[in-house]
Every structure is written in C-alpha cells, then in structure tokens.
Length: 302
Image (cartoon, rainbow, N blue to C red; front, side, top):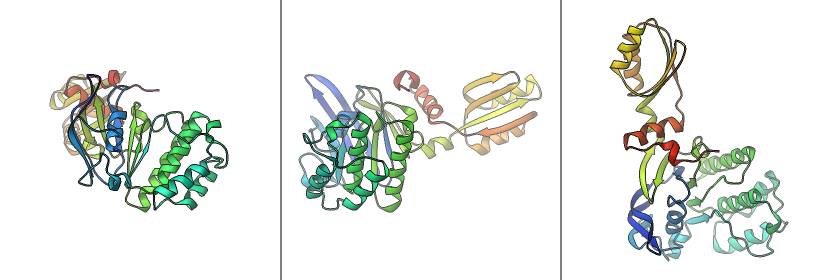
C-alpha cells in the first residue's frame, strides 16, 4: 500500500503539491488523472523517492519512500521523458537493470520485445518517442517490482500499441501481486484498465473513486414515455445528472441504484426502456459537478 499523508511540495515558492492525502491499495490498477501542471509527475517522483516532500510523509508498505533502498527495490518509475544510457541498446539496459533488480526476468524481456517487434539490439536513441515508451514500460514490467509508476503512460503510442500495453499489464496482474500506477491527462486512456482513479487538480486530490463503487450509484437509462405526463412523473421522482433526447427518445444519467431506477420506471407508462453502460466520462461529470467543477474543462481529451 502507498500512503500519501498531508504532503506538500514547493518549487521556488510554487506549490506543486498542496496538503495531499491519498491511499493507493495493492493489487489494483490506479489511475492518476489531471491536466499538465496538476501535480502528477511531482507526486510520482516523490513516491519513487527521487524528491523529498517539504511537508508530510509518503509511505510504501509502511516505510518512508525517500532515500530508502529497501523501498526503491519495490518500485520502478517510468518517467514521461524516459532516460537511457547514451548509445545503449534495450539489451544493455536490461542487463544493467538485472544487476539492480534481483527478480528481473530476462527471459520475459526477450519474449515481449520480440512480440512487440522492438529490436532489443538496436540503439535506443534511434527509436521513435513511442518505441522508447514501449521499451521503458517493458523494462519496468520485467523488473518484477511490486509497484510500477508510469507518467503519461500511453503518450506517443498508437491505439493498437496502447491496447497491447494494457494487455501486458492485465497479464502481469493475473500472474502475481502487482500494482501499476498510471498517470495521464486523458480520461479515455484510463477508462478500460483502471480499478480506481484519483483526479488531481492544482496540486490536490479533487476526488478519488473506486469505479465499480461509483457505477453502483449512477445509472444510465434510455426510455420512450407514453406521454409527457409520464416523463414528468419520472423526472420528478429521480435525481437527474444529465439529460438529452432525440425526438421521443430520452437518455438520462441519474443517481441511484439500478433497482431503485427500475422501480421508478415501473411506476410510469413507457413504450421502451433500456439500461445502458456508463462511461468513465459520465461518472466524472457527475462527481465533479457535485463539487462545483466541470470535468471537461479539467481533463484534456484527444
């Protein structure tokens, strides 16, 4: 478990992180979501022990993360601007990391680079941005640490490669205790992989939600009513988060459990009803509106 307790970090008087409290549990994929400048990179660097908080403490499995070799063995940090030794190949970096991480899996490294068509014997400084990101993530996975911290995880990757990397994460989690922490400015990049997401804004945590829990309290329904009176009775009986329609077909996002909404629908006359799956965007629109923010203004999307 990673515990961030009342952490503040300043750079030349500017507060990049402000009195932050956050818990990242083991065995889940945690998404850190926020625009550039929200504090994602600073937070990951503090968790990995690269920089020290000015105030507060960050604990990894109940140990202080800063300047702690025992904790650093449990972490692998893939920064947004990956670092490789000058003129090194992927194989060179793998051999170096094998000397640091005792569980580094060279066999897996060779297998994955072959699957992704990454030439491990080619100098990394000749790679494209996306290929460098792929190589860094593969090295991180093969280090077999308990936590893999990835900054702007999917930046520079095409859609096919994004799905390939997500599949690698899923496979790794199915085989061992492993907790990826994935930072991104793009809501949709995290939608189909994360269990919990923390939304960072201006150096703080605007909200943190387990997605399954959030989905239980929010429903999306598509409905055609027999009359305007039936529609009004429905809208009066539920708390509507979003609403739109095309002719007589209405689509609502409403607060409440599935059973509660089905009961209300059963009390009015309808021609057609269907419960629809919720997107991550719809969940966050609901949650941020409650605290007075518009998620579309906070999160950039491709």
